[in-house]
Length: 462
Image (cartoon, rainbow, N blue to C red; front, side, top):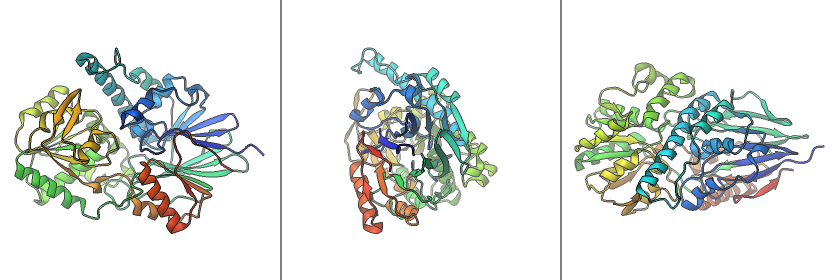
C-alpha cells in the first residue's frame, strides 16, 4: 500500500479568490487550480508572497475553468519555475489566451499609471508577470475532453464533468493512490435553467468533496432576470443618464447584449445605444462561436444576434481612443465594460467620469467580493478610490443577482442531494459566513460531516 494522499488548501479558504488546492501523493504534487487573490489588500498581497511550495516541485496542474481567481496565478507559477503540464478543456485553453494576456497587459498598465502618478508605495511599481510569462504558460497547456479519464501524475486518474459555470468549466473527479481515494473538486458550480450554459452535471460518489460555497448562506431572488433588467434600464432612461454595467468580458458581456437586444425587440425597453467597451469581449465571442455545443445560444449565434456582437445599436470599443470617445455621449445609453468587480479595466475610467453624476446608474451584474470597488458600491459607499483619487458617488446603484454564474444555496443542495454522503466535505470559495451557512445546511439536511478549512490547512485523505 502507498501512503495516503494529502490535501492542502493554499487559497480560496475563508475567501472567494485564489483557488489553489494541492494534492500530494508520495513525492508527487498535483495542483488543482492556480488563481489570483483578489479583493482586500491583505489578500492581494498574497500574490506577491513566495508560493507555499517551490513551483518547480509541482508536477502538474488541473484547471477547472478560465476565470482569473482560478487561473490568473499560472504565469507567476511558471515564472517561479513550474514546468509541468496544465490540463484543461479546449474552450478553457482558448479563453486563457485572452484572459491571461489581458491580465498581464492590465497589470503593466496599472503599474505604469501608478509610476506616472506616484501613488504606489513601491518604487517602481511592477506587474506580477508579463506577456513572456503568459506565452510560456500557454505552451504548457494540455487539452482534455470531459468524461475521458487521464493521468495528470502517476497514480492519479482524473476526469472532468460539466460544471455549468462558464464556457469550458469542469468539476473534477479524481482517484488517488492504491487503494484509490475518490475526491471531487467542484471548482465553481453554475446555475440550473439559466441562459447561456448547460445545467451542471450530477456529481459521482466520492470519499471526499471540496465544494464551493460562494452563495452558501443565501438564495438568489426568483424574479425573472429579463423583467429585472428591463426595470433597471427603464429607470435609467427616465433619469436621463448612462447605465454602467461592470461585467466579466467572457460570458456575462455576451449574455447582457443578447438580453438587451431581446428586450428592445419586444418593446420592453426603448432602442438605446449599447457600447461594449472590451476588446476581450469581442474576441471571446469568437471562442463561443467555435465551441457552439458548449452553450445554449447556438441558434442565436447562427442568426447573428450574439455571434457578431454588432447588431443595430451595438458599438464596439476596441481601442483606447474608441473607449474615450464614449465620453462624448450624455444621454441615455448602456456601457458594458470589464472588470466585473471593478478591480481593474476600462470600467474604472467610466466610473471616474460618471459616478459623480446623479443621473448615472451603475448595475452590479454578478458577485462582488469583499474588498473590491463593486462590493463597496454594493454596501453604499459614498466615495470610491480610483487611480489614487477620491471619486464621490452620486450615481444610483442597482444589483441583479439573477445574472450570477454561481449556484445559490438552494441550487447547491439540488446539485448535491443525490450524492451519497462523503466521509468529509470541505467548504471553500466562500466568505466565512457563506461557507459556514453551506456547512450548516448540509449538516441539517443530509447529516454530512463538514469543515471550513483555513488557508494553510492540510488534511490526510484516508
